[in-house]
Amino acid sequence: MKSLKEYVEKGLFYKSVVEDGSDIIFIVDYEGEILYHNDSVEETLGYNSNSLVGKVFFDLILPETLDKFKTQYKTSLAKRFNESVEFQFLCKDNSYKYLEFNSINLKHKENIDGLILDCRDITQRKEDAAELLRAQKAKEQFLANVSHEIRTPINGIAGMASLLSQNPTEKEKATYLNAIKSAADNLKVIINDILDLASIESGKLNFEQIDFNLNDLLSSVVDSFIVQSKQKGIELSYTLDEKVSPILIGDPFRLNQILINLISNALKFTHGGFIKISCQLVKKSDKMQDIRFDVTDTGIGIPADKLTKIFESFSQADASVTRKYGGTGLGLTIVKQLVELQHGEINVNSIEDKGTTFSIVIPYAIGTASKITKSTSAFMKQNAEQTSLKDLRILLAEDNDINRLYATSILKMWDCKADTAENGYVALEKVRNNDYDIILMDIQMPVMDGFEATKAIKMSGSPKNKIPIIALTANSSAKDIERCLAAGMNDCIGKPFTPESLFAALVKYGQQKSEEHHPQAVKEHIDLSYLRKISNNNTEFVNDIVNSFILNTPKAVKEIKAFLEAENWIKMEEQVHKVKPTLSMIGMPVAREKAVEIEILTRSQQDLPSLKKLALEFCDSLESAVAELKVMGY
Image 1 (spheres, rainbow, N blue to C red):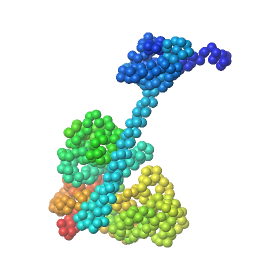
Image 2 (cartoon, rainbow, N blue to C red):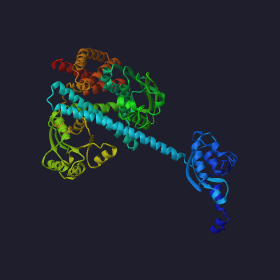
Image 3 (cartoon, rainbow, N blue to C red):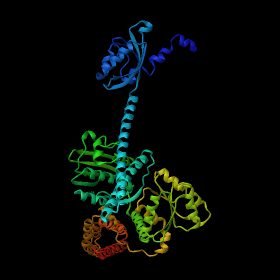
Image 4 (tube, rainbow, N blue to C red):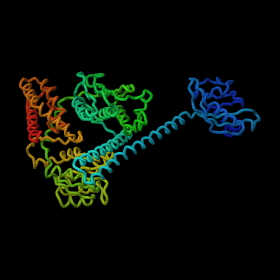
């Protein structure tokens, strides 16, 4: 066996280092002729053994960089050693790879006019550096966009608040308050986009697998944009292919989010014409359907060379778009990732000044109407029982004065009995000395935070450890929610919360108390607050919608009852479906849910007695609503 000393003395390492090494070794003369190269050129560059011998090194350099390379090469001729000289070298397949050489000048030791070039493939390094630079620039642009987007509404809020303190008229006050609300909504959109992207990229976004009615989802999404589209003079509509099974299993919230993003985008960049949402069956098996959703607009379109950029994080087709239309550039990124995480795909076709079509295909399992019926009935029953929250005893633990004022003002509007605590320690003392039905607990508070206070309440031996505790937290990621639940909290509401989300939580956990005060279902009353909000208190618009409802509803009720009597279920359902979109605007969520259940029971026809009873209740609700609106002076 050879000794290491003998191995070195005889130069046996030459083959391991030079012939079989991973580096490419060239020996070239001062004029650039290649006299030798090792076999590593095959693996890295694709050339066979000795195939480059006799060629001129310069002829294989990327032409537009040749002058710069020759300057560096000339420098190597004057030095004993040179290092880290980058260049692009022609491969066998006619592509170019980034290489880097360290040179040994044989003139200085051997008195030979030649160089040994030890070359390494740095293509990946260069690509990584370029990608890092691109990402850095994109994030810098994103931060600039977000900074602008945040500053603009904050300035608006501060300005409007200042004007409110200067004794404005009632009309001016309403205008200022609407401006503040609009600015706050813009801020929430930005924050939600950032949080959604963070959840997606961390892999912590969960998808529901529940039954839902696709037709109802599409109708609800379109309803939510109807006012904006009318104000811009844009026709907004949707179609649902009859071949598509209306009951699906999947995540309706994420589909809703995808469609809202795409329709919002279409509305932003469309100034006339139409926006159409079409839903078609692509492929169907016994248990699955691949469904394609097309959102088509007649907007400004997207340049062909920008189409590949629009789905990238932090980017829009053009920086000027951000300046003119606003936005963070995250909407389409989120849409693409939500689609792909559900094993779907998204494509876009666009012609400048003509319009754009975004197409998504998502596979869904086929669901059953009975499961939706069950959940819908439960929702209706719950809402009927929970129409009022009067006398619900609530403790609000919140250290921020403005948040405390906001929440208590809402609770007083609902006739709740609200008590407050500025930190967890005070909350703990108040729980010991008073009786509460629900505790609303902020997380980050001085003295004692929400986690500590919750653990102390839940660990107490008294019956008060059963009081439902709902977290109010600005940190609403999956990890934060898990931490809240682990601490013993029953639920979480993300900040900034809406009255709707707070009401839903109080309804859910205040059931026992509400039943004590309201054992009988209370008739649903008209609530025009939503209609006023979406129309910016446009009295003429509100009057038009309400008067149209009063005029058309009696005829619809008459036809529903006639078709019910004749047991013409299809025609009856058509009439119910026509009325349903207006119910959200009039502020009748319970009646709208009845409409949804009527549609489901009609299609399944599995429980006709319940369908008849529900249809009559629906007609009663409509007649009561018309009577109430007339009493209100319409």
